[in-house]
Amino acid sequence: MTIESQTAPVVTPAPDIAPAAAGFMTRRVMGTISVAVLILDQVSKLLVRTQIGLNDSIEIVPGLLNLVHVRNTGAAFGFLNAVVLANKQFLMTAVALVALAAIGLYAWRVGSQEALARAGLALILGGAVGNLIDRAAAGYVLDFVDVYWRSYHFWAFNVADSAITVGACLLILDMLVVTRDVSTPV
Image (tube, rainbow, N blue to C red; front, side):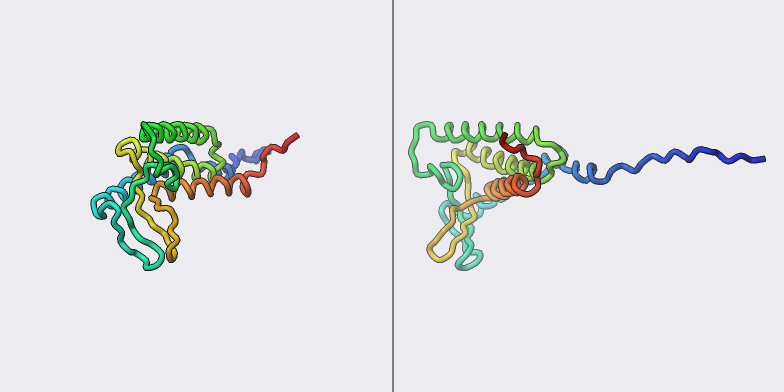
């Protein structure tokens, strides 16, 4: 006489898909994004430096987009570019280093489940390092994208600036839309 087991077989539950999917933005992935931005930024600046003369322009889309070769000794969007300061290169590099350290510390503390925030921070870090390299090595940041309409020109920018801007937009989007567990004032 054969007796069947009275206990059901033990089944190991399948891993929860949501936490695995939410945790894909590891520090390694963030580092990969940052390094990719940095490489793209530095290669594009090298091409501009070697192919376009200083203050020259190449029309790409008539009435909308030029490639230019300009130097930004100031801060974002040319702020303080025309200002003459003693030790300006040192000051701008120091400010960039402090900002980079603060962003890096914040990025280290953001949880892996906050994929949008981590992606934004990775873009910002890659762009910030790209511009910091320029500033520390040459005393200026090379900008080369000139978007304009008629006589209205947006500030010239580069790949690093674009990554920083997109990263900041992702952080804002994360704060306003995705992250809903923000503390409320008491």
